[in-house]
Image 1 (cartoon, one colour):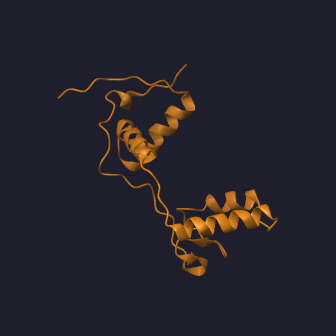
Image 2 (cartoon, one colour):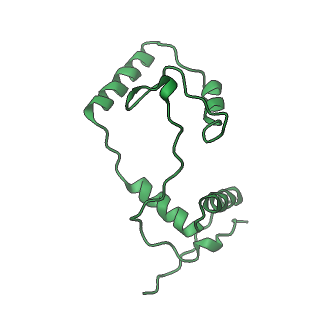
Image 3 (tube, helix red, strand yellow):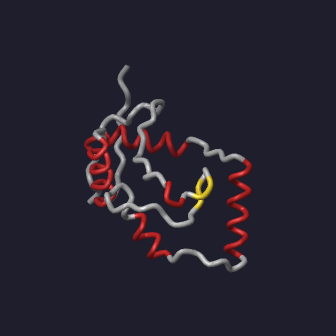
Length: 128
């Protein structure tokens, strides 16, 4: 069955970013966009205990509890997926305190059920 081709216009920086991301994952831009669209449409559910913990933390921040400065978090995030990655100190995750047993962040996973790719999106050209 032939699919209808759709052209999507994006700015040059977005086109380049999509092409690089697709190449790094070994997929076409069509597949990348389809995966991202399916992922965005997937509802996120959290157990009540996790929601309660998030609410507790947000209340403590609103009450003035100290937080980690943005620049420090940004610097740490840039190490994800690199040999320089080190676990955060005292940050809790879904399994409790992460500490020294932190796992490296997982790379983007391809999902198996996704909408049909948009034909022609592989030739995505930057918008002039």
